[in-house]
Image: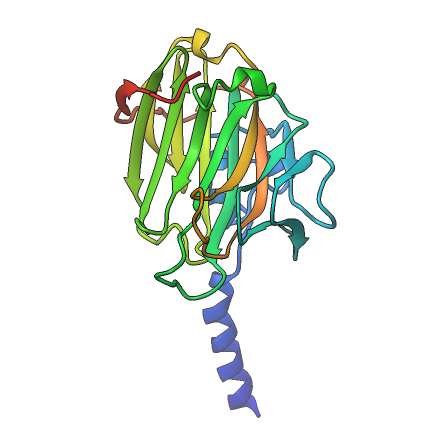
Length: 270
């Protein structure tokens, strides 16, 4: 019996370090105990943006501030906001938090709902900040994308900023794990008076020096499954574990120096 207890004790000692432990300074992640080991990997904690101004954990039903647009379904599943499409475009818009500047971040995953088929076209998965008023979008010419992903490039996360009259700044990064395939990732953007910075899995990956005049309209987050017109689409879902917004009042505790996106023009402006 004593030998069994000793063996059990050794097993517990080996397993305990795997459990999430609290860390960080009091108040980090919005709790007196600080962040858990899981939460330390996202940009908000790594760069010291807390306290958070607004957050969604998606417990219960779909929050009233998240509007469903287009086809498909928008539900909550086990604490995740779930966007699911089989045909046409579908998106959800965070309607209650329009801001010209600040820091936005989501923890999310995406996945094909069935094995890939050659007769079906993959959805593009986009997370972007778009103008509150549709007339300010100018056919996509005024927005900031946190993520633009296609399963045809499974480990590539693209992002961009568009500004009037036809400015475009585009970049991408390669991820260690696939963006799709139900793999969790954190995507964030910081829109400041003098720059836009993008973050993937708690690491700054690009910074564009940009004058504040480019962001003269309030922006809000939109998560979309973008279809190809006339094509039969591969059934796909996007799930958000959480979404958060921080102001710029607190300076980041780490620099955001990173390569600048490639400058070009956006031909679709109207």
